[in-house]
View 1: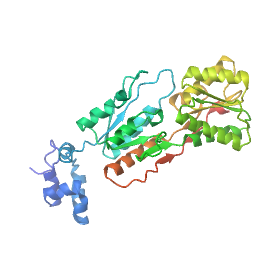
View 2: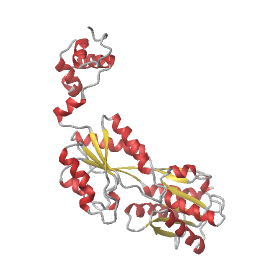
View 3: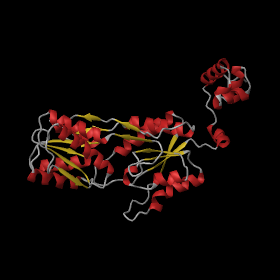
View 4: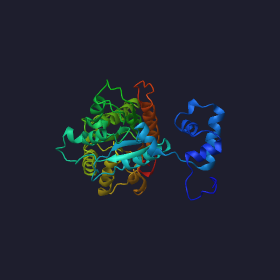
Length: 349
Protein backbone atom coordinates (compact mmCIF):
# COMPACT_ATOMS: atom_id res chain seq x y z
CA UNK A 1 0.00 0.00 0.00
CA UNK A 2 1.50 3.39 -0.99
CA UNK A 3 1.41 6.46 1.19
CA UNK A 4 -1.34 7.88 -1.03
CA UNK A 5 -3.59 4.91 -0.31
CA UNK A 6 -3.28 5.18 3.46
CA UNK A 7 -5.99 7.77 3.80
CA UNK A 8 -7.14 6.46 7.16
CA UNK A 9 -3.69 6.89 8.72
CA UNK A 10 -1.64 10.07 9.18
CA UNK A 11 1.66 10.19 7.25
CA UNK A 12 4.71 9.00 9.17
CA UNK A 13 8.35 9.99 9.22
CA UNK A 14 9.05 6.88 7.11
CA UNK A 15 6.55 8.09 4.50
CA UNK A 16 8.36 11.41 4.27
CA UNK A 17 11.73 9.67 3.95
CA UNK A 18 10.40 7.46 1.14
CA UNK A 19 8.92 10.36 -0.81
CA UNK A 20 12.04 12.54 -0.42
CA UNK A 21 14.40 9.64 -1.17
CA UNK A 22 16.38 10.10 2.03
CA UNK A 23 16.91 8.23 5.29
CA UNK A 24 14.71 8.60 8.34
CA UNK A 25 17.59 10.26 10.19
CA UNK A 26 17.80 12.89 7.45
CA UNK A 27 14.10 13.68 7.92
CA UNK A 28 14.66 13.91 11.67
CA UNK A 29 17.56 16.29 11.09
CA UNK A 30 15.43 18.40 8.78
CA UNK A 31 12.92 18.84 11.61
CA UNK A 32 15.22 19.17 14.61
CA UNK A 33 18.63 20.23 13.20
CA UNK A 34 18.11 21.71 9.70
CA UNK A 35 21.55 23.36 9.77
CA UNK A 36 23.12 19.90 9.38
CA UNK A 37 21.65 19.38 5.89
CA UNK A 38 22.58 20.73 2.51
CA UNK A 39 20.08 23.33 1.26
CA UNK A 40 18.87 21.14 -1.63
CA UNK A 41 18.32 18.14 0.68
CA UNK A 42 16.49 20.24 3.25
CA UNK A 43 14.25 21.70 0.54
CA UNK A 44 13.41 18.21 -0.77
CA UNK A 45 12.44 16.98 2.70
CA UNK A 46 10.40 20.12 3.44
CA UNK A 47 8.54 19.71 0.15
CA UNK A 48 7.70 16.10 1.06
CA UNK A 49 6.49 17.20 4.52
CA UNK A 50 4.24 19.83 2.97
CA UNK A 51 2.81 17.56 0.27
CA UNK A 52 2.04 14.75 2.73
CA UNK A 53 0.85 17.04 5.51
CA UNK A 54 3.21 15.36 7.98
CA UNK A 55 3.12 16.58 11.60
CA UNK A 56 6.15 15.69 13.75
CA UNK A 57 5.43 13.62 16.82
CA UNK A 58 5.86 16.36 19.40
CA UNK A 59 5.30 14.03 22.33
CA UNK A 60 8.24 11.82 21.33
CA UNK A 61 10.37 14.86 20.66
CA UNK A 62 9.61 16.23 24.12
CA UNK A 63 10.73 12.97 25.72
CA UNK A 64 14.08 13.28 23.96
CA UNK A 65 14.62 17.00 24.58
CA UNK A 66 12.81 17.30 27.92
CA UNK A 67 10.99 20.33 26.46
CA UNK A 68 7.27 20.65 27.08
CA UNK A 69 6.62 23.59 24.71
CA UNK A 70 4.36 24.97 27.44
CA UNK A 71 4.54 28.51 28.83
CA UNK A 72 3.20 29.06 32.35
CA UNK A 73 1.05 32.12 33.09
CA UNK A 74 -0.34 32.84 36.55
CA UNK A 75 -3.91 34.11 36.45
CA UNK A 76 -4.86 36.73 38.99
CA UNK A 77 -8.19 36.57 40.85
CA UNK A 78 -11.06 38.37 39.12
CA UNK A 79 -11.43 42.03 40.10
CA UNK A 80 -14.98 42.72 41.22
CA UNK A 81 -16.70 46.08 40.62
CA UNK A 82 -14.27 47.17 37.93
CA UNK A 83 -14.34 47.60 34.16
CA UNK A 84 -11.01 45.85 33.78
CA UNK A 85 -11.07 43.05 31.18
CA UNK A 86 -7.60 43.83 29.81
CA UNK A 87 -6.24 40.47 30.93
CA UNK A 88 -8.80 38.63 28.80
CA UNK A 89 -7.62 40.40 25.65
CA UNK A 90 -3.99 39.94 26.61
CA UNK A 91 -4.34 36.20 27.27
CA UNK A 92 -6.08 35.68 23.93
CA UNK A 93 -3.30 37.57 22.12
CA UNK A 94 -0.69 35.56 24.01
CA UNK A 95 -2.35 32.26 23.11
CA UNK A 96 -2.23 33.21 19.43
CA UNK A 97 1.37 34.44 19.52
CA UNK A 98 2.50 31.34 21.42
CA UNK A 99 0.74 29.00 19.01
CA UNK A 100 2.45 30.62 16.03
CA UNK A 101 5.81 29.98 17.74
CA UNK A 102 4.97 26.35 18.50
CA UNK A 103 4.08 26.81 22.16
CA UNK A 104 0.92 26.50 24.23
CA UNK A 105 -0.12 28.51 27.25
CA UNK A 106 -0.63 26.77 30.59
CA UNK A 107 -2.73 28.85 33.00
CA UNK A 108 -2.41 28.24 36.73
CA UNK A 109 -4.09 29.66 39.81
CA UNK A 110 -3.19 33.09 41.07
CA UNK A 111 -3.75 32.08 44.68
CA UNK A 112 -6.68 32.60 47.00
CA UNK A 113 -6.94 36.34 46.38
CA UNK A 114 -7.30 37.17 50.09
CA UNK A 115 -5.74 40.13 51.83
CA UNK A 116 -3.68 37.85 54.06
CA UNK A 117 -2.05 36.13 51.05
CA UNK A 118 1.64 35.55 51.86
CA UNK A 119 4.72 35.56 49.64
CA UNK A 120 4.71 31.76 49.83
CA UNK A 121 1.15 31.72 48.48
CA UNK A 122 2.16 33.92 45.54
CA UNK A 123 4.98 31.63 44.39
CA UNK A 124 3.36 28.27 45.17
CA UNK A 125 2.09 27.72 41.62
CA UNK A 126 5.51 28.52 40.17
CA UNK A 127 7.18 26.13 42.60
CA UNK A 128 4.79 23.29 41.73
CA UNK A 129 5.40 23.67 38.00
CA UNK A 130 9.16 24.02 38.39
CA UNK A 131 9.37 20.86 40.50
CA UNK A 132 7.34 18.88 37.96
CA UNK A 133 9.22 20.38 34.95
CA UNK A 134 5.78 20.90 33.39
CA UNK A 135 6.68 24.13 31.58
CA UNK A 136 9.67 25.47 29.66
CA UNK A 137 9.32 29.04 30.93
CA UNK A 138 7.00 31.58 32.56
CA UNK A 139 5.44 34.91 31.70
CA UNK A 140 4.98 37.17 34.74
CA UNK A 141 2.38 39.94 34.52
CA UNK A 142 2.02 41.65 37.91
CA UNK A 143 5.49 43.14 38.39
CA UNK A 144 4.12 46.54 39.39
CA UNK A 145 2.42 45.12 42.49
CA UNK A 146 5.70 44.53 44.26
CA UNK A 147 5.09 40.78 44.23
CA UNK A 148 8.07 38.47 44.76
CA UNK A 149 7.71 36.29 41.64
CA UNK A 150 10.43 37.83 39.50
CA UNK A 151 13.07 37.76 42.23
CA UNK A 152 12.04 34.24 43.30
CA UNK A 153 12.30 32.96 39.71
CA UNK A 154 15.63 34.75 39.14
CA UNK A 155 17.15 33.18 42.26
CA UNK A 156 16.22 29.73 40.92
CA UNK A 157 17.44 30.57 37.41
CA UNK A 158 14.02 29.71 36.00
CA UNK A 159 13.52 31.15 32.50
CA UNK A 160 10.88 33.89 32.39
CA UNK A 161 9.97 37.19 30.77
CA UNK A 162 7.81 39.90 32.29
CA UNK A 163 4.94 42.03 31.06
CA UNK A 164 5.85 45.09 33.07
CA UNK A 165 9.00 46.91 34.06
CA UNK A 166 11.04 45.82 37.11
CA UNK A 167 9.86 48.89 39.03
CA UNK A 168 11.43 48.01 42.38
CA UNK A 169 14.57 46.30 41.07
CA UNK A 170 16.76 48.53 38.87
CA UNK A 171 19.44 45.82 38.79
CA UNK A 172 17.10 43.20 37.30
CA UNK A 173 18.42 41.55 34.14
CA UNK A 174 15.40 39.53 32.99
CA UNK A 175 13.71 40.37 29.66
CA UNK A 176 10.61 42.55 29.93
CA UNK A 177 8.04 44.21 27.71
CA UNK A 178 5.83 47.09 28.81
CA UNK A 179 3.52 49.80 27.52
CA UNK A 180 4.50 53.43 27.99
CA UNK A 181 1.64 54.54 30.24
CA UNK A 182 3.02 58.05 30.66
CA UNK A 183 3.09 58.54 26.89
CA UNK A 184 -0.48 57.26 26.63
CA UNK A 185 -1.81 59.66 29.26
CA UNK A 186 0.17 62.53 27.75
CA UNK A 187 -1.48 61.69 24.42
CA UNK A 188 -4.92 61.74 26.05
CA UNK A 189 -4.25 65.00 27.86
CA UNK A 190 -2.88 66.61 24.70
CA UNK A 191 -6.05 65.54 22.88
CA UNK A 192 -8.13 67.48 25.42
CA UNK A 193 -5.81 70.49 25.32
CA UNK A 194 -6.19 70.62 21.54
CA UNK A 195 -9.96 70.73 22.07
CA UNK A 196 -9.57 73.90 24.13
CA UNK A 197 -9.77 72.57 27.69
CA UNK A 198 -7.92 74.61 30.31
CA UNK A 199 -8.76 72.84 33.59
CA UNK A 200 -8.09 69.15 33.06
CA UNK A 201 -8.23 67.03 36.21
CA UNK A 202 -6.52 63.71 36.90
CA UNK A 203 -8.21 60.79 38.68
CA UNK A 204 -5.65 58.03 39.11
CA UNK A 205 -4.33 55.47 41.53
CA UNK A 206 -2.72 55.92 44.92
CA UNK A 207 0.90 57.07 45.13
CA UNK A 208 1.98 53.59 46.21
CA UNK A 209 1.30 52.32 42.68
CA UNK A 210 4.33 52.58 40.40
CA UNK A 211 2.20 52.22 37.30
CA UNK A 212 -0.17 54.85 38.66
CA UNK A 213 2.70 57.27 39.21
CA UNK A 214 3.92 56.62 35.69
CA UNK A 215 0.53 57.42 34.16
CA UNK A 216 0.09 60.54 36.28
CA UNK A 217 3.51 61.75 35.09
CA UNK A 218 2.14 61.82 31.54
CA UNK A 219 -0.73 64.09 32.60
CA UNK A 220 1.64 66.41 34.48
CA UNK A 221 4.06 66.55 31.55
CA UNK A 222 1.35 67.48 29.05
CA UNK A 223 -0.28 70.04 31.34
CA UNK A 224 2.94 71.79 32.35
CA UNK A 225 4.21 71.69 28.76
CA UNK A 226 1.06 73.49 27.62
CA UNK A 227 1.32 76.08 30.39
CA UNK A 228 -1.65 74.70 32.33
CA UNK A 229 -1.85 74.68 36.13
CA UNK A 230 -2.16 71.34 37.93
CA UNK A 231 -2.78 72.70 41.42
CA UNK A 232 -5.62 70.89 43.17
CA UNK A 233 -6.55 68.96 40.03
CA UNK A 234 -5.14 65.51 40.89
CA UNK A 235 -6.70 62.77 43.02
CA UNK A 236 -5.31 59.30 43.82
CA UNK A 237 -7.79 56.58 44.79
CA UNK A 238 -8.40 52.83 44.65
CA UNK A 239 -9.17 51.38 41.23
CA UNK A 240 -12.93 50.91 41.63
CA UNK A 241 -16.00 52.47 40.04
CA UNK A 242 -17.15 53.75 43.43
CA UNK A 243 -13.81 55.48 44.07
CA UNK A 244 -13.90 57.15 40.66
CA UNK A 245 -17.44 58.29 41.34
CA UNK A 246 -16.56 59.85 44.71
CA UNK A 247 -13.33 61.47 43.50
CA UNK A 248 -14.96 63.09 40.46
CA UNK A 249 -17.87 64.35 42.56
CA UNK A 250 -15.40 66.10 44.88
CA UNK A 251 -13.48 67.58 41.93
CA UNK A 252 -16.64 68.95 40.34
CA UNK A 253 -17.65 70.54 43.64
CA UNK A 254 -14.26 72.04 44.49
CA UNK A 255 -12.36 72.90 41.28
CA UNK A 256 -14.91 72.40 38.48
CA UNK A 257 -12.70 70.97 35.72
CA UNK A 258 -13.98 70.95 32.14
CA UNK A 259 -12.28 67.61 31.48
CA UNK A 260 -11.09 64.61 33.50
CA UNK A 261 -8.37 62.14 32.50
CA UNK A 262 -8.48 58.81 34.35
CA UNK A 263 -5.84 56.20 35.10
CA UNK A 264 -8.22 53.39 34.06
CA UNK A 265 -11.55 52.78 32.39
CA UNK A 266 -12.87 51.63 35.77
CA UNK A 267 -12.30 55.10 37.23
CA UNK A 268 -13.69 56.71 34.07
CA UNK A 269 -16.92 54.70 34.44
CA UNK A 270 -17.18 56.13 37.97
CA UNK A 271 -16.86 59.62 36.49
CA UNK A 272 -19.61 58.85 33.98
CA UNK A 273 -21.86 57.84 36.88
CA UNK A 274 -21.19 61.16 38.59
CA UNK A 275 -22.05 63.11 35.45
CA UNK A 276 -25.28 61.14 35.06
CA UNK A 277 -26.18 61.86 38.68
CA UNK A 278 -25.86 65.58 37.98
CA UNK A 279 -27.60 65.60 34.61
CA UNK A 280 -24.34 66.42 32.82
CA UNK A 281 -23.37 64.98 29.43
CA UNK A 282 -19.87 63.51 28.82
CA UNK A 283 -18.16 65.28 25.97
CA UNK A 284 -20.56 68.21 25.95
CA UNK A 285 -20.45 69.40 29.58
CA UNK A 286 -17.37 67.56 30.88
CA UNK A 287 -14.95 65.58 28.72
CA UNK A 288 -13.81 62.20 30.06
CA UNK A 289 -10.93 59.95 28.97
CA UNK A 290 -10.08 56.51 30.35
CA UNK A 291 -7.19 54.08 30.00
CA UNK A 292 -7.20 50.50 28.61
CA UNK A 293 -9.92 50.75 25.94
CA UNK A 294 -11.95 48.01 27.59
CA UNK A 295 -15.13 46.51 26.15
CA UNK A 296 -17.03 48.82 28.50
CA UNK A 297 -15.40 51.87 26.88
CA UNK A 298 -16.59 50.66 23.51
CA UNK A 299 -20.25 50.08 24.46
CA UNK A 300 -21.26 52.83 26.92
CA UNK A 301 -23.68 55.35 25.31
CA UNK A 302 -21.67 57.69 23.10
CA UNK A 303 -18.50 55.69 23.72
CA UNK A 304 -15.65 56.40 26.14
CA UNK A 305 -12.45 57.85 24.71
CA UNK A 306 -9.64 55.69 26.07
CA UNK A 307 -5.92 54.95 25.78
CA UNK A 308 -5.51 51.60 24.04
CA UNK A 309 -2.60 49.33 24.95
CA UNK A 310 -1.04 47.41 22.01
CA UNK A 311 -1.55 44.06 23.75
CA UNK A 312 -1.23 42.04 20.55
CA UNK A 313 2.23 43.53 20.00
CA UNK A 314 3.08 43.00 23.67
CA UNK A 315 2.26 39.29 23.28
CA UNK A 316 4.43 38.99 20.17
CA UNK A 317 7.39 40.70 21.83
CA UNK A 318 7.07 38.53 24.94
CA UNK A 319 7.08 35.33 22.90
CA UNK A 320 10.05 36.54 20.84
CA UNK A 321 11.94 37.32 24.05
CA UNK A 322 11.09 33.85 25.38
CA UNK A 323 12.31 32.18 22.20
CA UNK A 324 15.62 34.06 22.42
CA UNK A 325 15.92 33.22 26.11
CA UNK A 326 15.32 29.51 25.59
CA UNK A 327 17.76 29.51 22.67
CA UNK A 328 20.33 31.11 25.02
CA UNK A 329 20.78 34.10 22.76
CA UNK A 330 22.40 37.19 24.35
CA UNK A 331 20.05 39.74 25.91
CA UNK A 332 21.00 43.37 26.62
CA UNK A 333 18.50 43.81 29.51
CA UNK A 334 17.24 47.04 27.99
CA UNK A 335 13.63 45.89 27.82
CA UNK A 336 11.01 46.81 25.23
CA UNK A 337 8.71 49.79 25.76
CA UNK A 338 5.75 50.06 23.37
CA UNK A 339 3.67 53.14 22.58
CA UNK A 340 -0.12 53.08 23.10
CA UNK A 341 -2.71 54.84 20.93
CA UNK A 342 -5.89 56.80 21.64
CA UNK A 343 -9.33 55.54 20.71
CA UNK A 344 -11.41 58.73 20.37
CA UNK A 345 -15.16 58.53 21.05
CA UNK A 346 -18.00 60.75 22.17
CA UNK A 347 -16.94 61.25 25.81
CA UNK A 348 -14.23 63.71 24.79
CA UNK A 349 -16.51 65.71 22.52
